Amino acid sequence: MITKLILATVLAVHPLGNLSVNHYDGLRLFPDRIEDTAVIDSAEIPTMQRRPAGTPATLCADLAAAVQSSVDGQPLTWRVTAADLTYRPGAAGLPTSRLTCHLTAPLRVDRPRRLTFANPYQDAAIGWREITATGQGVRLSASSVPGRSASHELRAYPDDLLSSPLDIRSATITAEPGSAGPASDSIALPRADAVTRYTGLLADRLNGLIGADRLTVPLGLLALLISLTLGATHAVLPGHGKTVMAAYLAGRDGRLRDVCTIAGTVTLTHTAGVLLLGLVLTVGTSITGDAVLNWLGVASGVIIAGIGFGMLRTSVREHGHGHGHGHGHGHRGVVALGVAGGLVPSPSALVVLLGAVALGRTVFGIMTVVCYGLGMALTLFGAAYALLRLRDRVVPLHRLERLRPYTAKVTAVLLLLVGIGLAIRSLYAIE
Image (cartoon, rainbow, N blue to C red; front, top):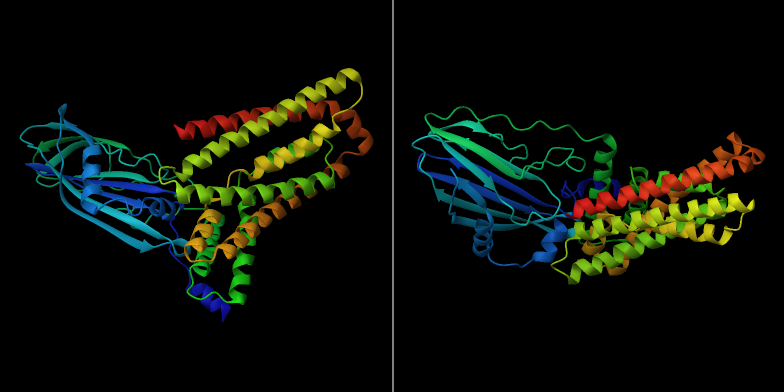
């Protein structure tokens, strides 16, 4: 019975993530005008933050004013001919939104015309960005964008969007009098890997349980188990400091107590991060979730770089004095590493929390977030424990002591470089 119900509650969780704002502009050129079907597809969290933000007409007027376009160097003036705003059920009972604006601008194609187009409206958030262009009664002799939409105008995204979303922000088109040719093919995209697909299916099922009309005890326990599994699977994917953690434990002669400390700190930090970010996004409509995550990524990189710098300084001092006295510093480094590993909250855990709060199930939402963090901690604990056992078997203790000055320095440099790289990458994403 439970299995059948779970299979029936698979919802269309937003494929690009719960923080995304996705853009599509479909340009159609006629002998006397140009038309644009502009679509803004917002996932659960930005929809929650901006609802209500105005009528469809006012929103489309703002969009039309933001469009940057010109013909032969002369700017175009856009006018709204139709506007529509619809809401659809999304993950964990939260809605998603779709704003559709039909725009037109005068354009006389009586000779070759060069058109430039960009639509920066609400483009600060992460998301899919797509522009297409076709001619009706005119010929497009050159175009930097395809004629067919790869996402069917943001209605059916390809499978691999989490890893490589389309990012077309501008178009350059040359239109001439003549018959329109066949539309060019859309951009080909690879398919998602099996782990991404099955993890997404599991997340859909959890969101279906959170948003169910009636949540019984068995279904609640099942939702917590799914959340635990999602957290464990999430930690298996690239990131979360598994390589950094392994290098640190190897370079510091880590013990089982250190592994437990890291796992526990990751759980506490991740849970607190999701709760605090949920509060920030709820009360602050001008704050975008992806910007917060990027700043947390910067902080995580700084912490890791700081750990590497501290290890390098300690190893140099110990080598010079011939003995070690950094035990207390090592314990603080273990805690800091756990904080860095759990500092960036998972958007999927965040949307589950927000959905539960919206349905009056705040305590249950917090429990799912805790289980998510525990799942991450279990994976990290297993990886670190396996590393320690492998290290003790491959390198005997008496040899490890002789290698320690070298492994500590190499590990310190690795942590320093990884931390700096992570901070720079997150800063670049903030723009």
